[in-house]
Length: 254
Image 1 (cartoon, rainbow, N blue to C red):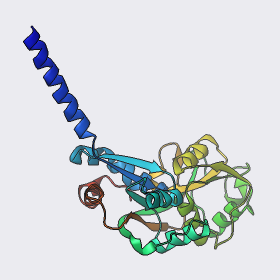
Image 2: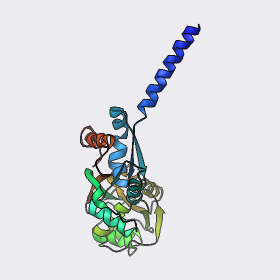
Image 3: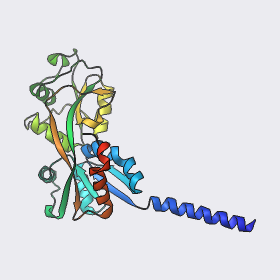
């Protein structure tokens, strides 16, 4: 009986060691909305199963993601911005990167930014001029663009500056968005707020669109999604990059 107990204990310890070793390896990626929703979330389960490496996604926005990379608390940072635009954003936010040359970048996807409406909103098409009027506050009622007689609520995400910046530059021609907004955080939070308010409108990565919201026809806005590391990627980050560019392509939303 004692021998049986000893064997059982050895087996249990062996299985526990396997379990621990399976999760011993981890890749932490700080990310904005575009890489989170379009690339990292869709490939997470498949990457972990294929490699045995746990993928931890920290959806903190491009500014904090890059600051965390500089501190060494994440292995990589990702954003829906060109490298130059990312560096420009950091400078604008008062968090300028001291040595941009130390960062190595790779393109891991492409993101399409879409306008989000409540699923019951009858508006099916919005021109650049109409969008500019809506998001700057000059158009305040849906009836002005062919919708119902109800006030427009603009939902604006605080943690998606890359998405916001591209939209402001391409659609609002650099003008600031209205200050009278329903404040949200992530792209997912923007979607949830739009889904909960029939009068609402917001923007986000195409990947967040589901049955609770709709995306009207609008001028197309797209951007690259890049991942950066300090110097050469670590072996595990390189495995992540290789997976994204290989098998992961069938899971990525573009």
